[in-house]
Length: 234
Image (cartoon, rainbow, N blue to C red):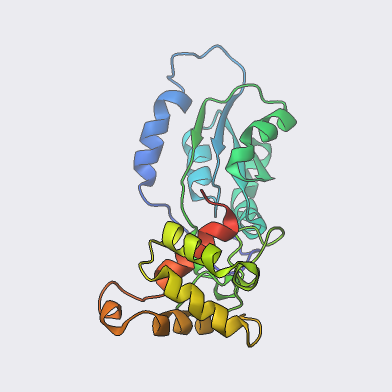
């Protein structure tokens, strides 16, 4: 995948792309049973870098696509990728649970198919400045839509110890959630906790040495929990 938002040819290739297209064929293909005329619509509810959208527009030339993403950077990149399709691709800054409002706004009463490719975007993980990854130092942001909502830094600064422990236990399945929350509390009393690298090291130190020997980086569960909380993923 290329890094610049204005790059002419993003190269991200979705996993299982051919299988996705085959599953959509009965609803979007030219041989579908309800060929009564009128426009056909498909929704890509998690547009990302536009790999699925591009393939759908190529495979189904009679179809119009509505692409949603909460990340403005993803919309800009996919917009470059899909520009050659002109008005057949309409991209909207929205979360997929806003789909009814989006369709109402576009005056579309019926869609023929929708694709939801759920999960965190590899593009976001690959951009260190977004703060999603514990392997690289960055500001503690973690917002999928950086134009709205609270950051991970604000969660760490403002949540009580019991509330921090709850989200670490519930969203990260962290066995040592209370220990980690207490370590965060001790650290934030000294000043704002702003660095992903410092948080990763703080979590590692809070977890008993015996538990750190297996299961990968000990901070991965805390970072997952914070990401889910910041973005309201559930």
